[in-house]
Length: 87
Image (cartoon, rainbow, N blue to C red; front, side):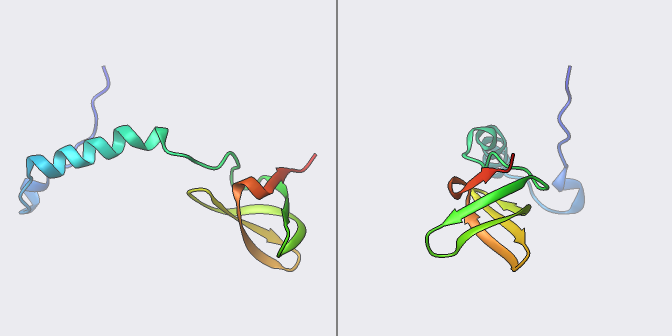
């Protein structure tokens, strides 16, 4: 049986409401189903954007559906749909 770690805020002098506990639980349930990038930090990718051009690099930043790619020219941010894995 898995016991979730629940921080008891009432012992730290902060009141705990049922609404805040329910919101926290709901966000934990919904998070795995949210859209996310299929790339991981450290993946070698090719980024192709009509405005920024085609660049090869390594994923160094992920936030939601955006990925930061470290290239020879610097770090560029792309949507995950503009990236392809390097062979």
